[in-house]
Length: 540
Image (cartoon, rainbow, N blue to C red):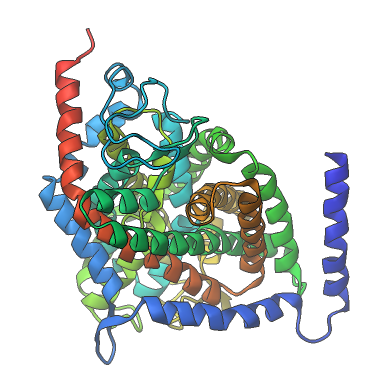
């Protein structure tokens, strides 16, 4: 470890020297200028409009996402409401006696190192993590700086009304998450050593093959894997290190032109140490960090909200009114604020992108629908609870008239004449009510960032394995590239990083929906089997 720390310090020296000697463009600016055209190109390609007016542009991908979530909610009879209590019981182990002893036939064709066409392996401990660990790992991939910076961005752009549409999108997303995570377990591969390989790549390829669309399945799965790798580099990585860097630089008032790159290098080393251990190491870290992180952040939000108890009804009323009659500068209309809310909610909870199915597929279970039920809790925790609390804090804060909703139209607002964006807005709101909250929020943002990055490194690695094989060389290549993007995210501007991140996260929706719409009847069948098993195997 001592040798490793010395090598880290040696790597930092060139960046420190560069920061001191730069007179014109700093390292951070150079990285941003190189990366911005890439971000713009990807964003324009993914968010192509289905309608474009003078003030409103409606991207097809958002229509696809929200329309699909509404369809699944209706088709499965509002599972986000009906099975909420059952999902909680699965997580706390109430139905473990039903789950583990039963051998469930696998669905689909055999693959090298995978399930046979007739039966799945007969070990009751098949899988690598528990229901709670799988949920914690997946939540750590969704509960992140989308909840702190993303909510602030939504309110800065769309005003308080964006919060209402974020909540609606979160509730609908619970149904989509249920479908995709059930499929993730149902079509997973189990290696000879017991390692689980699962997620959208597998249920798209194996599932469509079982339906007679082998070629379509292979193509869609490969496209998804490529986009998932991009998502792991963007929203699951660069966007996180970007926000962590913003609050760290603000805390220490660090003006160096290479500060972002330096912070990014330190974060890359920290994340690199953790991700070497794989999903079991990630699960061990996240099951401890995520609950603590979430409780700490939620407690602070509740303190601020309850300290301003008399303003809660005013804040809720403003959120509802502005959802249907927005007044934020530049938002345009009801459709404009709706789009802002839906986009930020989808980025935060990733329902429809299918990324969480990778973590959930590693669960120890025999009934795929059991983990699907667990997964529907994610958007509720992420968006309905945590995002809403952040929004209330910011709205209550701005009753003091500190900034104008809409800002400059790019997500930047001016407070006391100074520009703030993302986590910086949330930080100002916290500072109004909690002494030394800049330290607290910096710790929270960094914890959110690191936990999200290590979870997304697993998602991206599984996609990389799907494309390039399961060898050690392929693993190390991916992990090296992943850590490079930690540094890029920390150094580049929020605008270019979040454009790229949005594009990569939303790109995954296209191939994922191909799989979901072919295979949702399988989910219905597995849900009924699991519910029947619960009824017939009740604990004494």
